[in-house]
Length: 350
Ligand SMILES: Cc1cc2nc3c(=O)[nH]c(=O)nc-3n(C[C@H](O)[C@H](O)[C@H](O)COP(=O)(O)OP(=O)(O)OC[C@H]3O[C@@H](n4cnc5c(N)ncnc54)[C@H](O)[C@@H]3O)c2cc1C
View 1 (cartoon, rainbow, N blue to C red):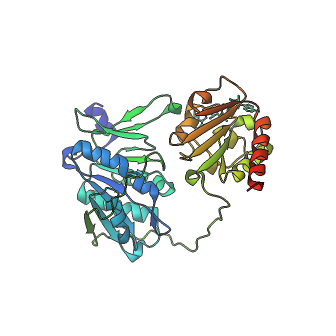
View 2 (view 1 turned 30 degrees about the horizontal axis):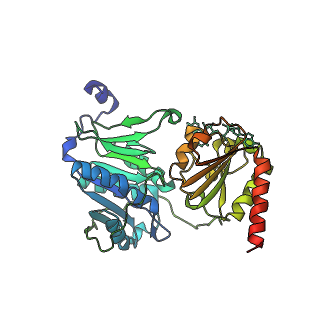
View 3 (view 1 turned 60 degrees about the vertical axis):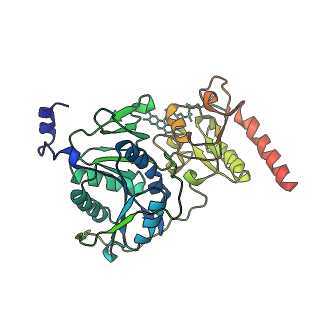
């Protein structure tokens, strides 16, 4: 982009010299007393970039009683963990947590901040980017380094996943990127690995202007799809909620859960939290049974980490057969009742 254009877009242009910014940060998220798997997964791209740039990876922990998670961050690959641990941070408020990370970033000048695209991360990342007046790339599927310029390249599918956009933020720092849970694996743990833990106590915690009165936990009847080992997913070919009852029975017998394509969600046959794909969730079951799903790129994006994919589709030319490990060309209404019958008999026989 031309300098002039940049100046029009950003009154503070030019920013400080980007080469003054060093280090790759991963923002940790502590939920229900645990450092989330989604935060640890962000260490995978962080370590890849750090090794290409000869830089180091820092985990960020903000909250109360969170310092004990620093060791886990280090054992999974962080070189250093910065901890802001205060009673005023007991409850998560996006602006308070965001402001702490902004203050840390202003002091330490990291080149890149990676944030998991969880519910919390989706609030924090744009807040941090906007306050720092820098660029953000959401829902990245990969990260790399431009070998000529040394800039971090954030890769994500735009426009319905038919292209891959390579996005850089040449004039502003830090660069900020998010990735959805399960897009990257958690790097292996090396117990006893050592790193630096830096406790920062002199950050001013601002009043969030809100007060948490109570928390109501909505009971979950089954595992969330991103944690399930077996998924039976239905698409438009299932034809309606009645068809999903068959899928639920099959999932129950296999010890799994049901999920769906966007078409099934849009039709109201299954809730949005169970949508698999680019605008839904990425899943990593051992077994994924796709029923009446054509296999559009945006759907298949969500099952890249699946073990075995079985497709049931009545159209022999359905694109899903090109990506499935096993394909059954049939009307699902003939196949699934037989599978259910077989599994019932097998479980009755012990
Ligand atoms: C920006 C963008 C983001 C998107 N994000 C997502 C996303 O996150 N997830 C997602 O799923 N989609 C997403 N989509 C939509 C995607 O492009 C497809 O339209 C969608 O995945 C198709 O859903 P489907 O396979 O259920 O339906 P269809 O494509 O209509 O396929 C239905 C299939 O069912 C088969 N069938 C019909 N009857 C039977 C039967 N009785 N037995 C067996 N097979 C049968 C048909 O042969 C057909 O192959 C996105 C699209 C865009 C543009």
